[in-house]
Image (cartoon, rainbow, N blue to C red; front, side, top):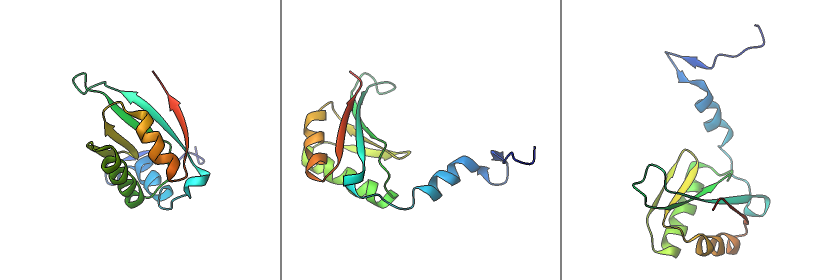
Length: 110
């Protein structure tokens, strides 16, 4: 039991989330990252969104990238739990924007 770590504490909340915040403090350069583009509509009343996952970026860089993609595509979106959500299913246009910025792309799901 000495090797186990506390996962949850009523005083500090979920310690796993704190570890994720610490580890995501630095951003990797785009050339070293692969962005996974997913389609999703669960829990959104049937409206589709494109999810951009697996990016190692700080919160500020993630928000800036989301803003750039939203402007290029002329749509709305948000950043939730380290995942960029872009309204609509236009993965090809999003992929073009990311490739121009230097990211590698993988299309995932439907």
